[in-house]
Image 1 (cartoon, rainbow, N blue to C red):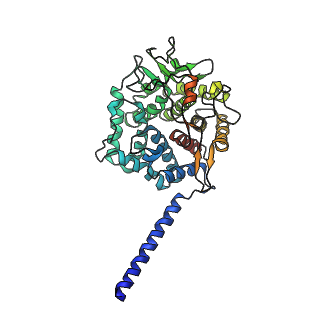
Image 2: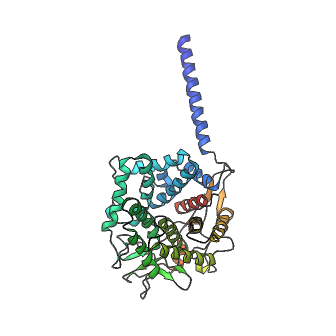
Image 3: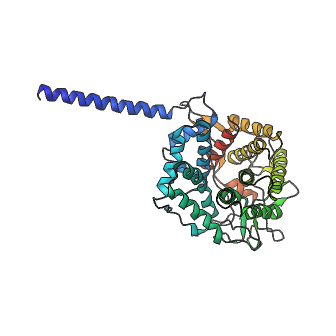
Length: 401
């Protein structure tokens, strides 16, 4: 090797060495999680460290349009507004760009499947379009909005939870569809469909509300034909914590788009106050709530993270926005303290994890879910399940913790 060639080789090696080390240092810098940061950022960075791409959350093998990831990225959107850190915006945009092509078409998702869960992730598209003005996001928004026009409904006008669950409304579905529907109609249609949004809440208040506890049964079957349904009322047999969380979050998020002079605004505010009063009575001394909240002492019941986080978010936001009296922020604070002392675990490297998350729960289907107490206790309990990650993030951001 000539001296000149040897020197060139050494220079190239040094360049590669320093570039590699710079990238390594940058990578380490990106995943550094300080215990001096707020819980919201610690959780957001922990998620990004484990899942560099948002679609990987819950260890999905391939990208999918997912309601749980939609909830998480809704929280990242709030965190971006709070911190102005572009990495949070990029995390959202990268997810959307993988699943929506340049013409605004969704990949691996057909809106005509009529599954209200699929609407939820669409909430990230409003700000993506407002920020970038990329037409594909507006096209995708319109596709999701159009889905409501021919979406199957109960005879009384409520959206079926899914096409595969005819005549059924679940509390879960209110969060999946109504905040998106309310925002779209408020921003693009002059609010003309707000009565329809409110009607969805009215139906479940009428049919799923339990006057004995002040809480809500998980779901309602208008046909009363499902084996899980009460043959007189059509309601599911039990009250499920996360369903209450979905309902509370749906109310506080949809209310943002109801003007104070709208005839349904006061009604929805009443529902939220009713819920806040009731769940406060069932709050455990730890600050948390049980998987089946009205049966706290029954064998097998446990303090569940996702539903507790959702109620913390709903109560805190309700108090901050004036939908609820200020006293409910104390209930939310107590709940958040319960989460970080009982259910959040911190690794030596600063990465945080949320424990005791019910992986999933529903009604009907195959294998059949009968809505019994034993059923709700039988579902898997996981660490870092996306329901818990997203709800904790929302709660922490709302409380500025």
